[in-house]
Structure formats: structure tokens, C-alpha cells
Length: 336
Length: 282
Image (cartoon, rainbow over all chains, first blue to last red; front, side, top):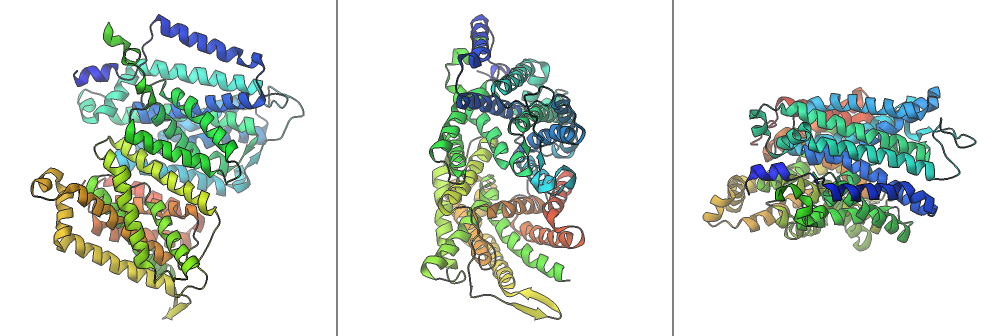
């Protein structure tokens, strides 16, 4: 098999009819899930799965499609969280608009940060992103306007409110909010992966020089990928802020978010649209149950599990769990 | 002047830490993202040798070096060996995973508490022409400088060191000439973490010891290595000193809580305008 063929068929889950039925069945199940009146914990678990799937999908865009390893992606999560909460706390602006503002701010920051940084590649870029992630945490810890180290406390409404995006009586509205963003973002990613942009990004990843010689503006495409990726991260930060109603620098710029984004993608399969979903479904329940099981040890146990899983995957199956699926599902196009 | 001196002293320690990282990178083109965590292990090992056996961090340097060297060789045999030929992304993820694991394991075993070696052999400070220098800091810097010179001498002058260099230049050619690259890699890891062990045990006399202590040091080490040029050991010395100075002068002139940002700004400037670093081969 030539390399050219590989590049063409590698990352896309091809959609034939049976696949579409499976997807819609799955989606229908997710929509009806709260009707089955699962417990609060199951709903929480599902919300966490949606959130982490999107977070790692966002990483997958820059890390998987365009091949730039970001170790500080949590920064955009925090910026999104701060944007929507800040405008709500200070000006009473509804978080619905706050989310959009957060997305725009993240896009601008990604472009500004990306212009100098994406000229770097490989290790240099990874180290730079690590520094960016920590720099943002330091800035927000010291910035008095957004509450410095104590953060922002979102004032509680007395009852459920769509305007304030707060729901105290049940987790179900949160479930649907996260579900909507999850579906939209996975759909966008799927579109990107099949579009010209997606193919160009993969060309940049596989061989930047060859891509350049074919007339692809490598730096521009990397920046586009970085901006898209940041824009996907932002709404998750905002929604999570609305979910827990406290925004502080240690939680929102937690290094763990950057780690998880990377880990889930690597676990599921880098560069596959459905890789992050597979990774999330395996890892998040594992982590949540591990946390319950070994609770009260400073929260380090789940991180230990992450570290071990990451090393094992890198040594034994660098292409991720999704590549264990039979080849004809992954590369359906080849048969035709 | 006070700030310049203390920056210089700190810079020498950064230089030694970074040279360990640089050595490993030059040899096999893998960035050890767990470098700061290894430093943390070195500090904890000298802490426990003091707490359990009553050995002063200065006395226990050889033991710490031995522990860390074994740790490095084990890292090579159990993890790095398998990912030598893998993509860069996989290599970064693997050492990053190791970093997370070591850090959280330390937190699990020893809790996130801050500890320090009470009453170390080196303490107090010396005054010289109106400048106060902490004695442990001063000794640490001198020891690091000597260790650095020793490392440089070893790599450039001895036969084993030349074999190391040969392996880093061309693995296959070196193998043909009878240099076993696998052994050289293990040696590189042992040496690299040996450097970290010296820096760590010197610092444990006057630094707080806790599981997250390595993060800042590893960031500075990355920056130093990128500044000096990946793989260049001499470059680390200059870069380490520059970082130490920027850190302490920036802290003095502007605001000490943004130390990391100044260093980060330097990193971006250098890497964007001179991507191969000051002395880099790559």
C-alpha cells in the first residue's frame, strides 16, 4: 500500500447507511436517556463524558489532525469559563451570550498566541504550550478584576432559570446542554475531517515540506487548526462554570484538563473523529469510579491511573484503541 | 548586585539540571518531560536519607546519585527502549505520562505536604563586600559548576564520552564501529539523572521539598535547553545563567510573582528568531 493511499483513507470513519443508522440510534438513545430516570450520579457521569469527549476532540483537532502537540490546552477551557462568568457577574449578561463571547475571545487569543508559536514545531511547540498554559494560570491568579486567587462566585438564582443558565432542581437541563454542544462539535469535526481543510491539515501533519511545495500555507493552516481547537474548548469551560457555579484559577486552569485532553485522544486514537469518544467512554467512568474507590487521598489516584494508561498506550498501541476495530469498519472506502 | 549574584548562583543550578536534559536529548532525540519529577525524586531521596538515617544531604550525594542513576537506567529499559523508533508525538506522550505518574505517585505516598531538612550541615550566610550570600546556595552553585565541568570533561575527553558523542551523531555508524547504542542510551540516562541528583541533593539543604517542586525547574530546564540549543551541553551553561539572571532581575525590577512570564518571553524571542538556539545542532 502506498503512502498516498494511506493518507487518503486513514482518519475518516466512512459513512455508509448502516453506520448512519447506528449513529442515529445512538443519538436517539442519548436524547431519551434522562426519561429513563437514571440516578443523579449516572447523569453526572454522562455529563462528564460529554464534556471530556469535547475537550479531547478539541485537542484532537490541533494534535491529531495537524500534528502539533499542545500541553497547555486547558488555558482555553479556563478562558471560556472566565469569559461567560465574568460578563454574568459584572454586567448580568446571560451566559448564552457569554458563551459566544468566550468562543470569540478564545479564537482571538489562539490566533495571537499562535502566530509566534506555530512557527515552532515539534518539541519547541510542545514546550511553548506548556509554558502558555501555566502563564495563563499565573495571570489569572494575580488579576484583581477577575477576583485574583479566589476567583468569581456566580450569584445563585432562587429558582431554575434559563436566563442565568442555572438549574438547581435537577441535572437534566445540564445534560441536554452538554449533549447539544457535544453533538454540534462532533458534527463539525466530522465535517472538517471530510473537507478540504481536513485533508490539508493532515498533509501538513504528515509532511510539512511536501505540503508547502503543493501550495498549502503551512503556518496559516496550523493557526486555523489552533483557533478552531480553542473555539471548541471555550464553550466547555463556560458550561462547566455554570455546572459547578464557582470559577477559580486553580480549578479552571487546572493542569489536569490539559493532561486529560491529550490522554483521551491518545487513548482513543489520534486523528480519528471518533477516537476521543472511544477514549472518553473508557477512561472517564474508570477515573470517576477510581476516585470514589480511593477517595480522600488528595485526588492523586486518578492522575496515577492516567499516567500509567498513557505510558502503556504509548508502548503497546500508539495508534489508540480505535485501531483495534476491524479494518473494514475503519477503512470502508478501500473495499469499493 | 545582590540580585545579580543570586541569579548567577541559581543559574548554575539550572545549567546542571538542563545539561542532564540536553545530554539525553542529544543522544536519542527524546525530551524527558519527566525531568523535573526526577529532580523531585532526588530531593525526596536526600530528604528521606536525612529523616531516616540522619545523613546530611551533602554526605548522601553519592547515594542519591546512585539511586537516580538506577532510576534513569530503569526508565530506559522499561519505557524509552520501546519508543525509540516511535513518532515524536508518542515519545512526548510517554515521557509526559511518566511525569504525571511519578508526580502523583509521590503525592500518594508522601502527601502534598511541604517538608524541609531541618538543621542541615550548610546554613547561615556569608558576607562579602556588602553582599549577603546564603552559604547553602553558594556551595550548591559551586558544586554544580564543578559537576558541570566534570560532565563536560567526561563527554569531550574520555573514550566513553566520545563513544556517547558518536552515538548521538550517527547511531548506525557508531554501532558498526562497535559502540553498543543501547548501552550508550542507558549510560546517557544514568548520567543525565546523575546530574539531576547532584542538583537535587544540593538544593534539598535550603529548598522546600514537595511533590510539585519539579514543575518550575523542569520548565526552566526546557527553556535553558532550547536557548542553548538542543543537544549542546556548553549551551546549557550560558542559557542557565541567563535564565537565572532574568528571573532574579525581573523579580527585582518588575514583580516577582511573574517570574515565569519573563523567562517565557525570553524563550519565545529566542526560539522565534533563532530556532536552533545559541549553540544548537538541530
